[in-house]
Image (cartoon, rainbow, N blue to C red; front, side):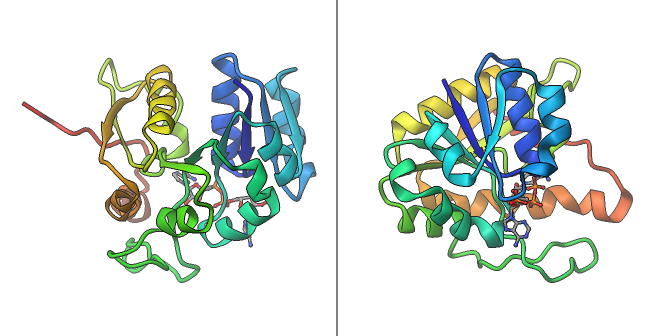
Length: 214
Ligand SMILES: NC(=O)c1ccc[n+]([C@@H]2O[C@H](COP(=O)([O-])OP(=O)(O)OC[C@H]3O[C@@H](n4cnc5c(N)ncnc54)[C@H](OP(=O)(O)O)[C@@H]3O)[C@@H](O)[C@H]2O)c1
């Protein structure tokens, strides 16, 4: 499975290395290829870099890992025909450019809307699945919690796409909670706000959510 990653930040690089570790060729898309020289050197022969359009074309599945405010414009650069009928792993959060208040991030969406709904509405032929949005990049690939698997909350309209994502999460070491359709991103995206509070207030960044059930 070829993986096209839109985004050259820590999430794009971390997931890129994770997919390569699990045997998948990866192309990261960016408008600034120079940022990825070190990643390219360390990631090996299954790694490549190109434009956002190149990465979207390359991917059998596509990972969206850009700043939330840039998500729509990056998808436009990627090209709708390169996204159609593909699973899009949407890691983004709608974080506003305004500063956090007492450690609480501000969003440019509200509770009756989500960034993923905006993306899905704009690109109806692409199959967005919210995933990896509620855990820090350092814990996205086979996180070690001493034998306990953290929970990854996912949502999206297309069952096949969610099936692809569930297979990926299984290999990446997560327990999966499928919260349903795209609207559930209204509840999943704000988990990022909660996740970040201990980081901003106490510099604690190495935690993940676990849903206890009986
Ligand atoms: N960092 C985490 O631990 C974490 C965890 C969970 C979810 N997320 C979410 O994952 C996404 C990626 O996060 P990240 O920390 O890897 O990187 P980021 O700094 O949020 O995003 C960097 C990417 O956004 C692109 N971009 C396009 N227009 C931009 C603009 N005007 N300003 C800044 N960047 C722009 C950059 O493009 P170029 O490649 O052309 O420079 C780059 O590819 C975000 O939506 C974030 O909320 C992050």
